Length: 372
Ligand SMILES: Cc1cc2nc3c(=O)[nH]c(=O)nc-3n(C[C@H](O)[C@H](O)[C@H](O)COP(=O)(O)O)c2cc1C
Image 1: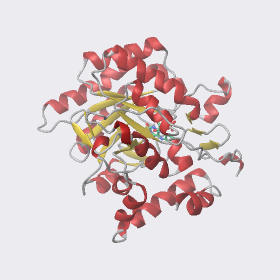
Image 2: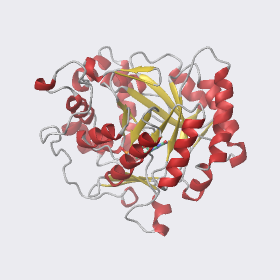
Image 3: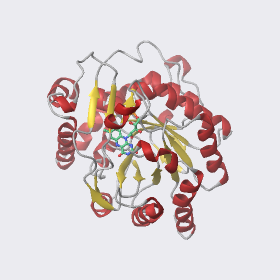
Image 4: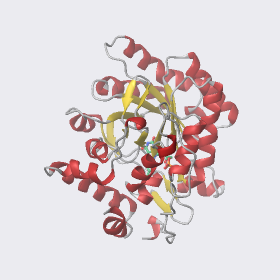
């Protein structure tokens, strides 16, 4: 349905128009009796071998939706019905904000990438609560948190704490996002002092609660290996529960002056670095801390490599935008035990096969939103 009906239509629209249309469509489907059931029939793959328990939370499968797709928590139930194991809502800020001026999202179909500098556009905390307060049975929901753009760096911990306290009862885990859209700020936001200042108030608040909510940190792929190690050491030394590695990259084929115009690059160009970072964190932390792998997960082969590198869970974003929800089906099917391997304890990533990764990425012409 997506490939033949919706995808050609969406490609005629600018990225954010297409995104709004998909969100609206999913909300309408969610309102129609049997709509969510139909989504499950079309895309979900259910199998006990896909189930995982990570940071004390049970997931029906390890494949989730990355932040940036459900920015306001409007469609987590529909994404769950479709078969995703989890949805990361946001990035949310305390007050709604319109983000950077448009155009701010650019497809590069030849490169299988998306350049984005949305600037955490979202409707804010109260709107998210309105969507999330009714619950989300069957799907794990996390919230990705950051401060408002107008908040000075020294006030950022207050913004993040405000979101955390107010959303605590409505979601299953939190991700503190220090990988924003501002290349200038990367050094500051990934510094140990800044990260600790953001996290300590959350740990303090959580200590006083009856229920435990895992806290993760989402990092940039542009960190040096030493910086990755420093952040891994924070993971080991504090009650931080895990790391989401990674966001899109400022470094890519573009030279420095163009980078800031174009924002972060997500998709195929970041696959290798994201997997390398996950492997590094996994090895340094002795494989004992949860890692969510994000970055360039374009098909089953990349997802399997990410899991093999040490990720416990994986998020789809650019791959999902290019290929639609059938990507979820293909990825989950590739994780099922093969008939001859269907022994007990076979819960691991399988070696990719040619059939597991059919080339569904039709070569499309490069479309820059700015040009449309
Ligand atoms: C259009 C777009 C918007 C995004 N918005 C956010 C966001 O608001 N917060 C965030 O943490 N990551 C955001 N991301 C980053 C994704 O969550 C993901 O971490 C990154 O794109 C790497 O995964 P991918 O290569 O599979 O896309 C966004 C990505 C895209 C393409």
